[in-house]
Image (cartoon, rainbow, N blue to C red; front, top):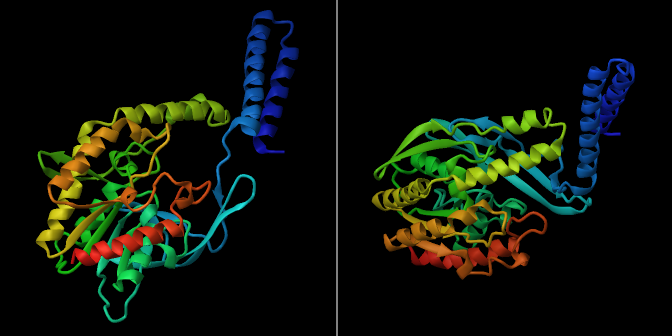
Length: 369
């Protein structure tokens, strides 16, 4: 018996007992009866929701060798420590979605350490020739080290690569890492590849409670670092659902708030995104490097909050291209709507998808030297 079910049984039993004990005090009894009826009805709805209607999501198996995350400033979150880890995702039915091995190393970025996944190493060229920035699409969630996009590009181009992608990161993380490590460095001959997905702009706007990280203010064409994004909480949902006991109430309110937050994201956030990417390209050029925006323009479904801003995002990307930013659309390489390129029930790219993109990108990078 689950703790929630036990809680509902105990509380309902107590309320029914109170109805019996107060039967001679009519007004109080009516009030207790009303409370009992409401709580009993909500308990039945909640039990049905948990067992039959609530979407069951895949989950990661927790073991002594699982990768974990810790709070870190200024990036918000990062992998807890270097080392070799395994990651296994299981479907609600109990089937294994993927089993992957991750090797994490540590690097110095400004005044802080950043734990990130290994890239391809070429002993004859110890310096990182190609730097990859982004989220889990760059990290390579769900595939082994040697199947990630940075690693495959390194193998195919025979150049060392640095994988600075991390799960949940957005454009704000990418820009902060670039600013702290590369903006004022000598980047002669270095290539930068930022793998962007549409959701990166919304993550940088701070609408998600899980997307912590740095915040920037745009004034004209100047970006100013302002510290950390304000935390997102769902206090109303928490208290309205009796401290989370009635998850169907909590989920309804949270989903509604998330949709409304997405709709309220201003066009200024897309202007900010434009200037972040534009600045990375400019800094790369001025320090001897070359910047490439790899846009993974995957097709979204009706639940994707990014659908409200597709036109804004498309306009800013077209503007970047007209400004001379080297851009590659993944849809020009493979069919981004084809399910075979994504891990079933997970959504991250498969090893085959990374290999196809890496094959194209290796040739593109060589021509961009």
